[in-house]
Structure formats: C-alpha cells, structure tokens
Image (cartoon, rainbow, N blue to C red; front, side):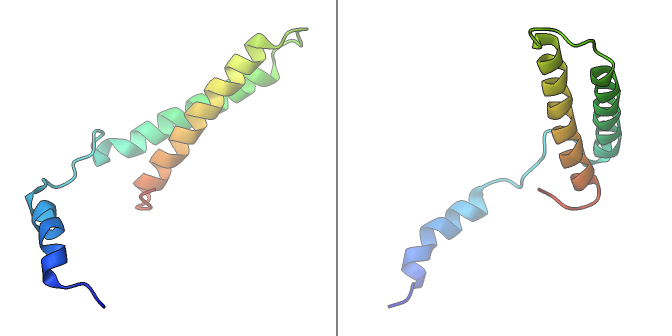
Length: 86
C-alpha cells in the first residue's frame, strides 16, 4: 500500500501556497556579523582570563556565559557565510 495522489494533494497545495523563506538577517551581512561576534568572544575570553579570583564567581560566570553565547552565534554565522546552512 503506497501513497496515492489523493493523500498528497492537500500538502502539495499548502506547499505551493506558502511564500518562499526570507531570512531576518540579510545573507550579505553574515560575514560582518560573524566577525563582530567572534571578535567580541575573543575579547571577552581575554578579559575572563585577567579577572581576579573571587569567592563567589558571579562576574566570571556572567562573562563566560556571554562569551559562550556570542561564540555560538558567531560560529553559526560563520558557517552560514561559508555556505553551510545550519
């Protein structure tokens, strides 16, 4: 028992009716965005390595978390720039 055209007629009509995907960030902006995010990541990593050690590492956790988020988005932007759309 396979699929027939009657089962797929509704999904095909919906697929044809939907507009093409348009990203929120223009693809021409991705290399600059990736560079800015990754540069900020490296700057925060340098700042993190020079922080004095505290008893409660609240500032360290905040700086490390921010650097991690910026690095993650920077890597995704770099991959998209290279044509690997993740």
